[in-house]
Length: 294
Image 1 (cartoon, one colour):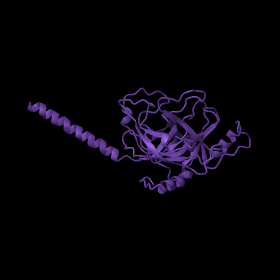
Image 2 (cartoon, helix red, strand yellow):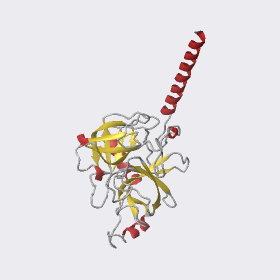
Image 3 (cartoon, helix red, strand yellow):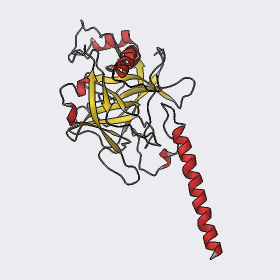
Image 4 (cartoon, helix red, strand yellow):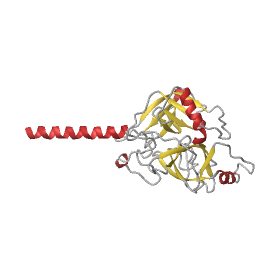
C-alpha cells in the first residue's frame, strides 16, 4: 500500500511540475512564434497544409456561422483583417475563432475558441473597387488566452527589403478559383514577394489594362503557377520570417485582392501593414487599448 501511495504522489508531483513548465512556456510566449511541441500532435498533415499550431495567430472571421475570411491576432483581444470582408456586415453578427486547424471541426485533441466582436473599425478611406486602404480592426469581447495554439503575430518595426523574399499565407480559402467550397484544413502557401514596379507591369497585362496604376499602400506576392492565396483567404496575414530569428514571424501584408488565382505572372495584392501601422496604433489608442506589443 505504501509503495502504491508513493507512486501516486510521484506521478502527481511530476504532473504538477510538467504543468508549471507548460505555464512558464506560455507566459514566456512572444509574438510571432508557433509552438514547436504542438506540431507533434498526431494529425494527417498533407502537402500544402499547415501543421496544428504552426501559425497560431491565424483567425477565422465568421459571419452568421459562415466563414467570410481570415484575420490575424495582433493582441489577445484585437484582430487585424481586410475591410472588404466585413464592411457591409453588422458587428453583432460577426464572431472570430482562434486555434482552428480543420475549420468547423471541434476536434477533441484540438478544440478552438470563439469570441464576439464588440466593435469594428474600418479605415475611413477604404475603397472597395481599388482595394485601397483595405484594412480593419476587430475589438473582441474578451482576451484569448495565449496557449500552445493561440498566439499573436508581430507587426513590422521597420520597412523590410522585399527583394528575394519568400513569405507565407495561411487560410481556409478555396484551392482553385472555380471551387464552390472553401478548404477544410488550414492551408500553408509559400509565396515570393514581387517588387511593385514588376507587379504593376504584370497586372497591366491582365483585364485591368495598360493604364492600371497600383494604389499606394499595396504590396504584391505570388505569380507562380498553381501556388497562390485564393477566394476566402482575404483578410489573412502575409507573414515573413525575421532575419534575426527565422522561427519568429512578422506580418507585412493583409490578403487583399487578385485577378483569379494561381496564374503564372499574375501576382496578388496585399495591404502593406508597415505603411498602415501608424493608423493601427492610433485606432488602438483611441479605443483605450494599450497593448504591450507597441
